[in-house]
Amino acid sequence: MDNTKQYISAEKKLALENELLDLKGPKRREILESLEFAKSLGDLSENAEYHQAREEQGKLEERISAVEHILRVGQIIEKSHSTHVEIGSTVKVQKEGSSDKQTFQIVGSEEADVAGGKISNDSLLGQALYGKKKGDTAIFSTPKGTTKYKVLDIE
Image (cartoon, rainbow, N blue to C red; front, side, top):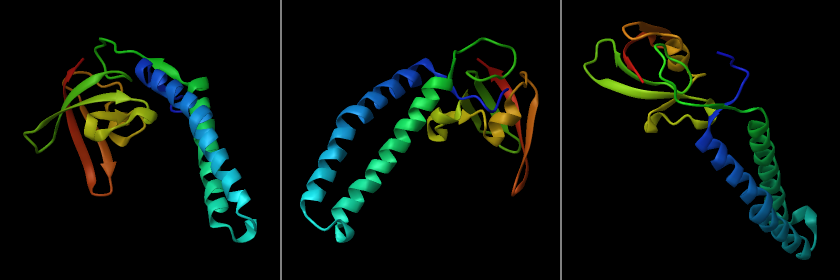
């Protein structure tokens, strides 16, 4: 697993492309209009509207840059039917000492959503599960001690 790469699904790539269009189009125009309005109010040194619009513009440009970077270097992951855990795998696990079973999909950090059952390949659990086979135990350390998950199934 190469931790320097950005891994995204085809669906996430499409969502990012649509987000980029929105950011570069309507969102950018909206902020430019806010800046023009704020400038028309006069003295920029004490103009809260102007400073807020500039801050929003900075955040927008940072997000545009981040999305462009992900789209440029992102590697599309596809679901595979492998015998070991990899990015794109759906893994059924059971935490040691618990009767509850959990299912996670291993995704890139941009798509991680623990509540939605998607964990990042960069997370402690994602890293511990990577390369494991059905029946293996993934072990990793947390501030509360060592945590173990048994791999029950891989899709």
